Image (cartoon, rainbow, N blue to C red; front, side, top):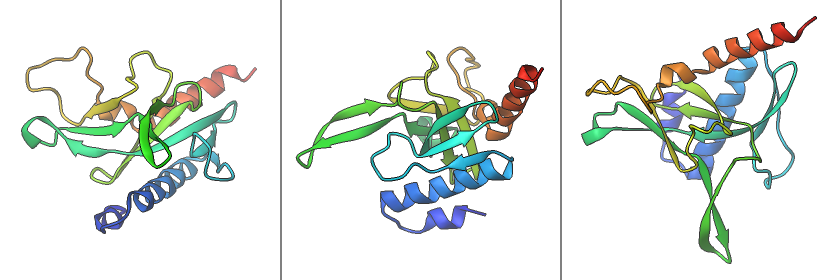
Length: 165
C-alpha cells in the first residue's frame, strides 16, 4: 500500500517524512496515542503513549541488504549525522535521548520496534534478518519478525495489564 509512495524519487527529508507518517499511522491503528514534538531540533520524532509510559521515538527507514545482494536483511542507521559549519562533524547515537526506534521498511511494508538502550543494539548500523542465516547461525542474529510493531504492542499490553491493581 505505502510502497508506491517510496518508489518516487524523493529527497531524503521527504522519505523520512513519509516514514514518520506511516509509523504514526501504524501506532494509531493499534490504539496508541501519538504526539509530535514541536520544532525541528528534537532528537526524537514522536512520543508514543503506551498507557503507562511516554516513549520518545526515533523513526528510521530500513533498506534491503544482504550478502551478495540476496535481500535477506533490512538495515538502518542507529545514529544521526552531525554537521558543523556545513561540514560533517561526526555521528551521534540516540542512547539517553530517545527510548525506541520505530523502523519502517518500504520493501516489506512493516514497522519494527527496537529499544534503544538495549546492550545488544549497536550504535552504528542495525541489521534485521528477514530469513534465517544460511549457515544456521542464531547467536547475535536479530530476526525482523521478532521486532514487528504488533509483537511489541502485545508485549506492552501485557506489561500494562500486569501493572493494573
